[in-house]
Image (cartoon, rainbow, N blue to C red; front, side):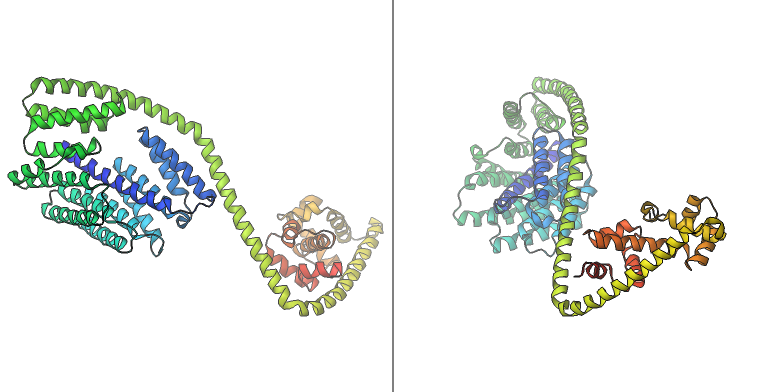
Length: 537
């Protein structure tokens, strides 16, 4: 059980190493221009995720990776960070057992990248390899194999196009080898181990000696474990003996040594190596112990000592495991409390940040729309200049007639207002009160004003309002209200420079097309033409 856990951890370590190589190369090619607001926000979330990741606060790290991933509205602004945030978010989902969600995240990245030539083959190779890992854990062997093959083909394209080198292709093949090895599909594992060695030799032939000695050691250990597992103990021992373990760069790499030693039954040697690994981690990480560390460092050491017959050391390790579990429980409890406090403290900041992004997007949309409208107006003016000269003359004449008619109507209403109430019929008196009421713009500019509103304000029944308007003005209540709205809008058009759209909004008629239709029916010209005619333009 411990060996399988170590294999899985090593697989994801290779994935993470591959990710770091790929994405660091991609980001180094980003232009030095000032980042957009979206990219700056993603960067800040990503930095916070990396910070909490290094502190082993997985919930906070996952939260900020998720925020970084979901911030992207246009991934093409930075494919590198988009792919990296998707990878990291999916990886943490998989750690919690949310493999379906992890697959969905990676699938979304690949779907968004479909058809974009600037999303390179090496990114596709890496992400396909990651999704195959998740599928393999779910037991979807057919789907995983298909995605591994796709990943390999994409990586070959990347090498051919010089997007990537043989080293990353080798790492990809090693990762796939480990995946098949962990599921005991030794035929496929052998094929991928051979492919990885082929890529290593090509890498070596290209003259880059940076990782040569290190990976010679790795391959000797890979082959030793594989040969031992498949029954060729003598060849396995020979391959192990050829490995110069001094070239291994990290403590985690020494797990490859223990894998072989445990498989070969050399438990005492394995226990000594586990002790060295435990010592190395104690030097770099201090006394803090997590459940992962217990499972990956202490438990295998206990089994090695027990199988080696070192009863005292095994019992001491069992005691240390118990103490470490207690320490891990306390640490996780304190860590959870700290994470909840941080989430609480930053909640309002997150809301403010979301509001700022939303406002920024709105402003950008408004600005683009405004520029498009201005460009359209300029184009239309250029093409219709001659026609407008004729039209403006006609409209000025029409405007004068309209003003004369309105003046006559106003005088007629004024005469009615001067007549004593006892000389007027009930409908005329009601109409007189309606005209007086409509001198208040707040009434008719309210979009909700209708015949019932007028009746309520006059303290009467809306049927009487309807009868009074039909007899005295030959209008329905809706026509009467809209006429005042149109005249109010016309007044604003002639006395202010407010945009026509704003004038429409302030008129009380909420639908612009309805307003324009009514305005043109009443004045035989559009609002813009009316304004020009009024100003003599």
